[in-house]
Image 1 (spheres, rainbow, N blue to C red):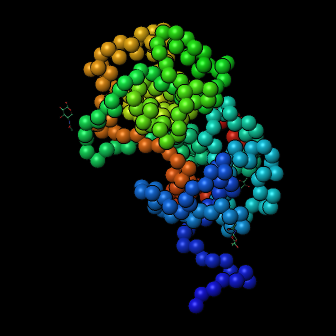
Image 2 (image 1 turned 180 degrees about the vertical axis):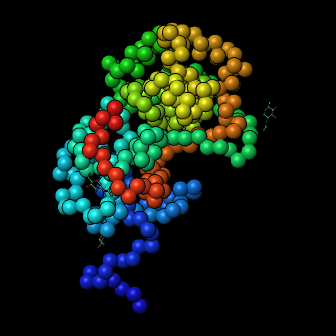
Image 3 (image 1 turned 45 degrees about the horizontal axis):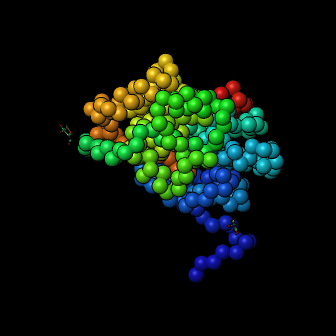
Length: 310
Ligand SMILES: *[C@@H]1O[C@H](CO)[C@@H](O)[C@H](O)[C@H]1NC(C)=O
Ligand SMILES: *[C@@H]1O[C@H](CO)[C@@H](O)[C@H](O)[C@H]1NC(C)=O
Ligand SMILES: *[C@@H]1O[C@H](CO)[C@@H](O)[C@H](O)[C@H]1NC(C)=O
């Protein structure tokens, strides 16, 4: 018979790495220790139970949940060899207090491709065999989903000019309502989707591109980092960049032209015979951390992240 009482050693864990999530990210909970293929090897034991602090090989701090005060970080000494991982999916423009992490962090985990643990908002997977993609039925022209309506932002200025030349349906706060579960079905009806980022930073290409546009099967019109940066992640003929046009009016004219020319419009889907988009979720991000931790250098320090994270 087996039983466990506090005077006995803690339960044995059959994984070579113990990973403590210092908090759930944004308090969102999801199944731990269920990494899907191909992220299921090698194994880690994940927990949010802080009593594992002394035994954890790595502690992952979701930055937005600890960025207010240093007291939100552990107040007891760090066990020898334990990595502290800085996890952040927000852009530098929306990441206050990064200097709070000075002289604390060993590994970075973010959408930046030069992070120790690279967790992009999405990626392309090779299809097992080439197959022609069926473009979802299109009945509408341009959609945009916005959660934070900031009239002075760069993307709003662009939108304000663009909308004078082409019909745009806006969804979200103060606009057309869109239940989350209908998002892909609704956007799939549109020929184009405005994947406008809230700020422009290297590699900051978010769910606006991956989930809203590509997974929905619509053509993204992107505003964010330069075209070359997008082309590191997606084919050049899979998207339209606002910088490709001298003005919003010229972009509108091009979209109206594509609307009347199905052959030309369909060129934006050619890449889909070989590739398909996939999107991240929290569980997969942490599974990627497990894989990267197995290959992590035994010693690494960052005096500060502020110079890198711009
Ligand atoms: C945390 O783990 C300890 C054993 O290590 C256990 O006694 C305790 O109940 C756990 N707490 C929670 C909230 O699961
Ligand atoms: C895809 O469609 C093209 C043109 O209609 C055709 O030539 C090609 O054989 C198709 N490919 C596959 C894998 O079905
Ligand atoms: C992690 O960083 C801290 C603070 O810079 C440092 O004291 C510690 O030795 C580092 N640990 C590893 C495993 O790199």
